[in-house]
Image (cartoon, rainbow, N blue to C red; front, side):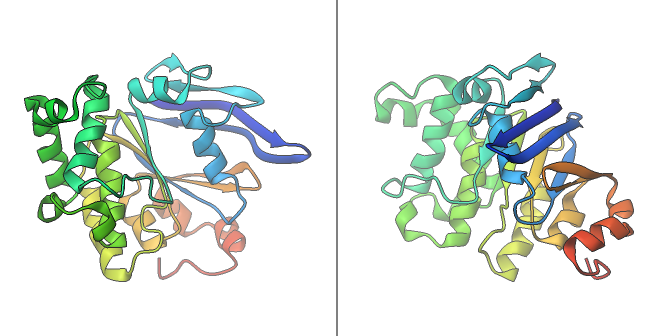
Length: 247
């Protein structure tokens, strides 16, 4: 469903990704781990088209999308949530979800009231709100909700575009233990045909949701395999300077 072939990017003399090759099957849930500066976010920027690789290619559902812009990749089913909130604070939760759904259905350029009332948009909005536990907050302005709920909304906005592949950059960043536990449940309850690629620092979440784990270090893939193999990897323990026995 999503594949990179020898994806390479440098900034001057600094090699940020080095011939990264990954292949995600439909419905796979893969977590990317790595220390700060490993190239994880740069890899995401290359996948969605925010950066252009020096060499290598990106393929989505069998199509080479390396030359496509961010919006064109999004229309083909590649969506992303970010470490930092990218929401419309002056709109309600419902309106943020509806706007994302309207963009996906091609109605975003019409009158706002018309877009919000369209049956297909209302259907998507309600389905996504249930999936990410946002029903109690639909009529609240984004500026009024907690940081944790904003993180849920970020995921909801991405889902409202009906992606084939969803990239999530540290979805539990900045949330407390209880909210982190809620994200475990949220991710596990997403449709199994949705392909997920997640950057995560929370080892509990990583091992809970991952079908596959990939580890980057200095821009290179140094591990790619099953969670059980990752738990026992001496290389991974050395990279993180600690034991994963309690992960």
